[in-house]
Amino acid sequence: MKSTGIIIVEDQVTVAMDIEMRLSALGYAVLGIATNEQELEALSARQAPDLVLMDINLNAARNGIQLAGQISAQGGPPVVFLTAFSDGKTFTEALDSHPFGYVVKPFEDQALQRAIEVALHQYKKQNVLQQSDKLVRFLLDHRGQTAALLDAKKIFRNCNAAFEQLSGYLSNELAGKSLDELLEREPDEQVLLRHRNGRAANTPLQLQPLCEPGTGEAYAWLLAEPASREQDELVNQGRSVFIREKHQHFQILVDDIIVLEALDNYTRIETAKKIYTVKLFLKDVLSKMPAPSFIRVHRSFGVNFIHITHLEEETLYLGKRAVPVGRQYREELMNRINVL
Image 1 (cartoon, rainbow, N blue to C red):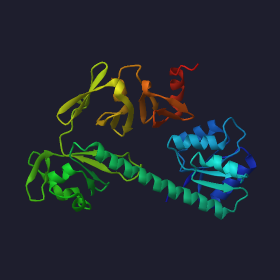
Image 2: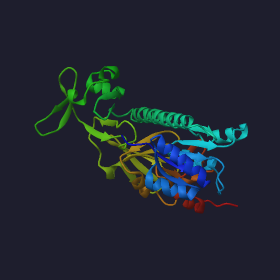
Image 3: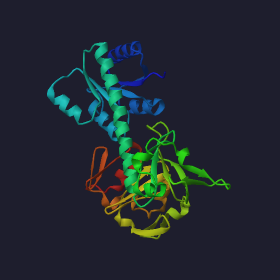
Image 4: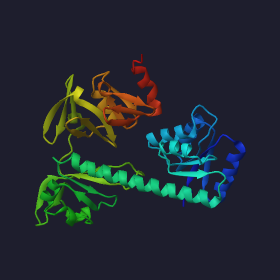
């Protein structure tokens, strides 16, 4: 079984070495020790830690609370604080960075181990909830399509009303059924959905991945319609774009687009009135948008510059819509902002 990988962020060498020995004795894999932001970034890029043990009071440009806030905003691993300060002010400030644990020095090995295990458990639970939200959002976004959700073993978990009508099953009746139970393979290798009354639905099925491997349960979606050609998904017409939905193209003004969000090999296009989904990578959608209206601010987000209202630390706001800003994109963003 793979050991939990931990990075220690501590600028006192003797303290860091003591923590490293104690973690090793508890069975954890210490991936490295960082004393500042730059070392933490370099270690994280190489090692991909499962958890970060963070000293709050670092003798560096940014303290542990600020670094933890950045990790949280970028969707990084859980952070457990280590600190010699137990006063209310420090604790309150630490809470704002959304840590998964808080251990006061000096501490017993058992207290440290329990804090780490609770943090890992809560982080996993949070990811499951976020994944569930993502799947529900998928069904809502595809109300006009025939869609169902399956897990990694191709077992049905949920579906929308259109899929219920096509299959003849209610959502709660489908739950737990295997995809293979409902498939009918034609001589030409085309795969059709078999209705509960025995007839085959005349719409081919397209099975597409919904999640990247290792990001939780590997759900997939099932679209009961032929996949559109990628070049037809989004057509640029200068200050407007045409988005393909089923067999129609809908025109939306570029200025009405607020946020672009990557969902694996799909992209959500958010406007104030509606959310669209196209089968294109985020980079490809951005390439079809007129420059310099859009800017990529995170590996998963691009935004329409005209909708930006304010920037706080590592978070960009477009009205009430908050979007994280990735470190590698921050410089370009700041170069675009005209600061007086």
